Image 1 (spheres, rainbow, N blue to C red):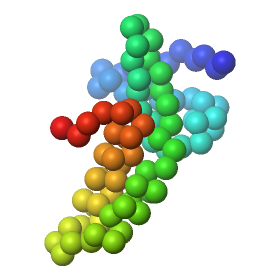
Image 2 (image 1 turned 30 degrees about the vertical axis):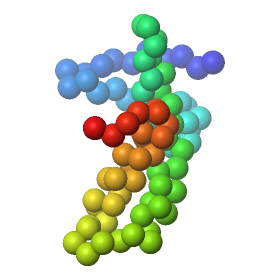
Image 3 (image 1 turned 135 degrees about the vertical axis):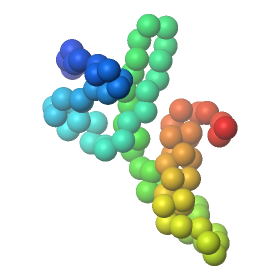
Image 4 (image 1 turned 60 degrees about the horizontal axis):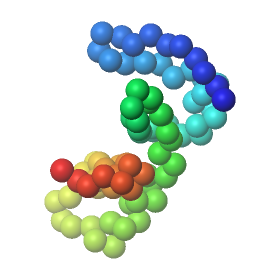
Amino acid sequence: MTTTAVKITRKGQVTIPKEIREKLKSNAVYFEVEDDAVMVKPVRDAAGSLSEYAGNVKPGVSMRQMKDKAWEVAVREKTNRKSS
C-alpha cells in the first residue's frame, strides 16, 4: 500500500505524486467516499465508451459533446451512479 500526504490548495486541488500516477496507469480518476475514507480510483477506458456512439453520430453533435458524454458514461459505469 502506498500512502503520501499532499496539501489541498484553496481551490481544492491536489497533485497526485508521480509514483502513484504511474501505478494508476490512467490520466483520469474518480473518487469513492466511505465514512471518513476517500479512495482515488483510475478510470480505465473512457475511449471504449465512444464506441456505443460511433454508429449513432447525429448532425450538429460535435466531437467534444460526444467525448463529454462518453466520459460521463464511463464514470457513471465505474461509480454505478445515474446521470443527473
